[in-house]
Image 1 (cartoon, rainbow, N blue to C red):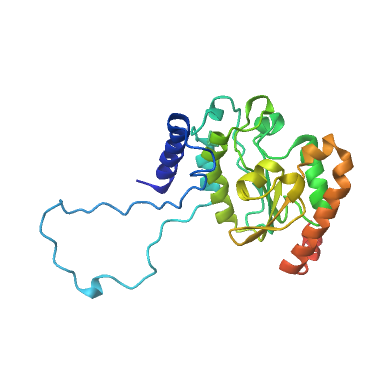
Image 2: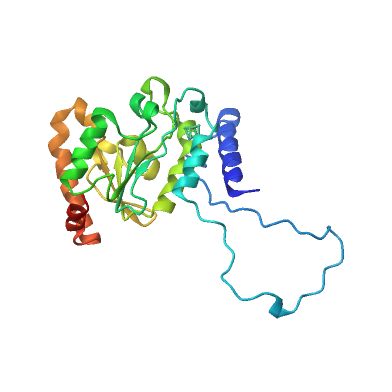
Length: 263
Ligand code: SF4
């Protein structure tokens, strides 16, 4: 069985465990690493073992490993995914967009109406505000950022994603992070923070602090949609971004000059 099939079966069993046996959200949240099964043996079971071939029959080469995920491959899987009920109401899946070797990964919540129509994350007013916030610290989706959501299909009427929907979808984001290898992560809003740092105390208390996601520094920030509803929080958001910029200057000195030159 291929790794992708195993992940789908795992997500299905996790959903079943919650709805049939009442297993609580939080259990089995983190999807294990799966690898493709080795190629089947050509000898029938129980038949005598073939004699060992001479050592020189196998030229020395790199050890065989499971093929690495690519963003394009993950995108294809997302586009055909039917692991939760959101597949019934979506118009388009929203995998993500941006630089494939990003300095920063921005993780939002779930697609809204315009994202669902266009298949792109953070479009419309919230997307414009996000772009303005990123530009203020020399980041952009065209040059040094990748932008993705925690959930890849739109919840109807923009309701909050259900725990089982988040659990079924999260392995896509985990794999995107592994493939992109960003130097730092901005978790925009409480859904992204809750999934990436389950032990955090929520966005209101945690915004502007640094956390660790598998060795990658992560900062939670307010979601642009929240800032549009409550502009009084923009000053706090700007303070957070300045702290994040200081981190980026340590991680990659001169990134602002590189960004300016590449615009
Ligand atoms: S939300 Fe995620 S898990 Fe659910 S159908 Fe869409 S891609 Fe699949």
